[in-house]
Length: 186
Picture 1 (tube, rainbow, N blue to C red):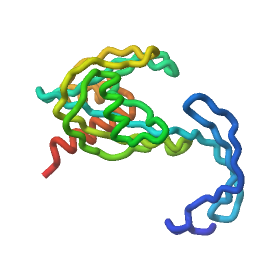
Picture 2: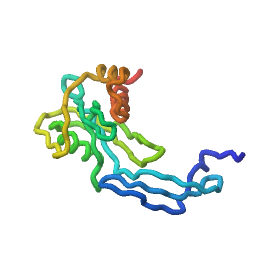
Picture 3: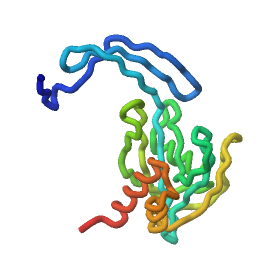
């Protein structure tokens, strides 16, 4: 059995075909050459990317949303988030989504990093931002968006993760990143 070094793990695309295309997602099937010279097939979803925002109120609480998600036929607790429009910078997406979904705008934006939620079958990247210095305006939700916005302390959010009340992966990661940013380990 041939041992691969970390510098020799890349697969190379031989051919690519689109097998489905919707309004936001594209499903691709590629034929690839493996690092050992063999051939294989990879199916994956092309995603435009997204942003998740951790809105921190002056009282120390976070703004969250309850929203129905059709694919799982369930209401979830999430942080504000949305897809990046073509040509849009991730920070601008965060500003737009925060205002659209909650009615808030923020004076300060801090990048908390990136997450790749589905590395086995999607190229999606989610940019995570902390938003501070919030000012309430009027939400600008799309006609097909229905949600309930509420606030909760970071401690209660983390407890809700442990109890299984918050199960959305991007929200969980964003909460952990926020905890580390706000309460760094000495």
